Length: 350
Ligand code: NAD
Ligand code: TYD
Image (cartoon, rainbow, N blue to C red):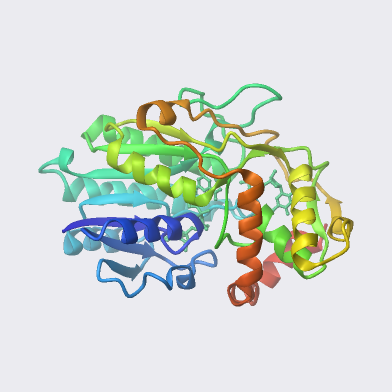
């Protein structure tokens, strides 16, 4: 049975990838390796935790001896690497943690793969899941393609850019079969409420102010998380060794327009007077080094591998809101404890 190690499988995107692989590929053994940081939550995988082709291992990718042992003992065949520190604001307060997990952790996995797979690199695959933020910021025009130069601005994007370079270097230097995908902003269920959409849903629900950085004019290209998981599936199975694919929604939204749409949906779902939630919008101090615009050209993925986004944003956002309103227990469990002190530190002093 082919063994695929999925790192960061208890996080937002990772849990959707694990669910998809466990459900669609009973012939694979899926091992989910996750440290269960504040962002990792085994509740995200309740529906698959008893499946015979699924196993969870708690561990830290920064711990190199542990990773080496895991590869040897489990005889890992392939890796889909999602574990990361993923929030830009946290990277501004604590950059070193991002270097450790995103850079050192990735290199530890590459080293373990190199040792374990050296007799036949072609029979194994190391898939690194990355972000469009490595390309930096666009002006009003243009799109990121796979050949856009790297130009990261935040400690988060700098750490992801560095990890991408290490993955490519292990392909070029040692011949490991690697693939990388760089995706735009995801949204959907199980998204930790430190990121714009789930944070705003949670605040609107609780009648708390919605913090909009700067003038709300920054633009992001939003993709439904299940479309990303499907892209990862296709790329894992079909991409050529050493290749890179951009993944995106062709779905650009100014933050303030997105929040206004979200407020309208929330008013409808909560039975509030139209315009009630929008009164919570509060402009706050801008994020340092805030990238203006991200937008992905995913033509290569569409032409080579036949992937395209399946869901219109309005429909996806409504589905997302419904998920949060029907999963109060989940929301309560992730917003108690350390979330409160994070929130105060991040927004209290603004
Ligand atoms: P997330 O923060 O929701 O989840 C990250 C997961 O990694 C958590 O389960 C956490 O416990 C685990 N983790 C963190 N440090 C670890 C360590 N040292 N060892 C083992 N596990 C550890 O992140 P996400 O939004 O699901 O993003 C997943 C990946 O996709 C990341 O690599 C991110 O850079 C990339 N990505 C995210 C987006 C997005 O919009 N969220 C877009 C493009 C790419
Ligand atoms: P975020 O969800 O943190 O993703 P990223 O920074 O990786 O794109 O932020 C999305 C956009 O929303 C970004 O332009 C920053 C902005 N933002 C706010 O205006 N207020 C907030 O409270 C947060 C978390 C983000």
